[in-house]
Length: 326
Image 1 (spheres, helix red, strand yellow):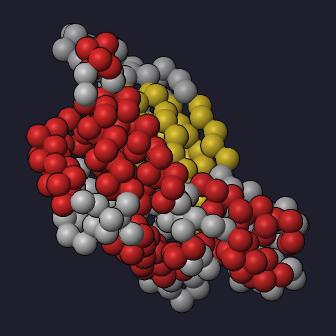
Image 2 (cartoon, rainbow, N blue to C red):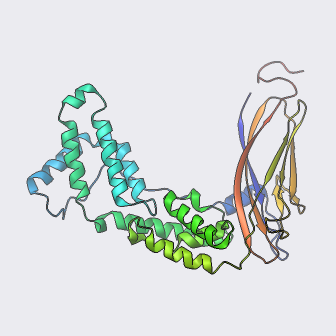
Image 3 (cartoon, rainbow, N blue to C red):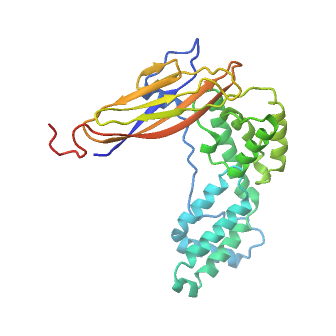
């Protein structure tokens, strides 16, 4: 029988005066960041204050929305999530919605010959005429507030999440990392990535010019600041009667600075930067092992990295539950 078992692994910096290590299930609860769930509500629009839209068209629009909105729920929810993606422009979000609408409205030859696309396109035009302040900018600000709130917890080591795990436009994060790398000649730490993305102004509407200037100044201040790179090497040893997996943290960063690490999993701890887990099963099992590595260099600067890997353990008796096993 193949099954999946999630194994929480906590790999953290050993603090000389820190609290005693937590049991895995406790650590999992404490070190998980608040879940960022984007609110979506299908195809809706503000009915009042639609400037420049004749009353007749406005009334028609809401009649159409009520009649066909359910067919376009997925497309509208994607549009909601795009507005909540920090740094994603309104234009790119709206144009994606238009393309999605058209695909849905003309997915069959019968619909292509009918009026649905014409009607839905008019509905999209009404939506596109709503001012930025009515919906787009407030959602971008909501995203920014949620992002910075999680960032504060991460930088205080209250939980661990990377910037890329949150709804942030890839171009924004790429500009931050590329600018930082070009000035400091090293990769930014996960903590520094949070610092940089927080420099983005939610009212820039996806324009990264001001953001690039702010990141340039931030990176310049980090030229002479060390930054270790968290890494983990995974080694698997799969056998018939027993299998094992080893997580090793390289003891030196790219610039030769010694790293301080601490590894803990399944209630076991290691101060050597290496931990081996062994498994012996009656039936075949596939373990999905997720974890986190945090390293600190000799100057007290830290970096962390999340990882996930799988280990298939070969059962010593049978590969199917229910088959006689002696």
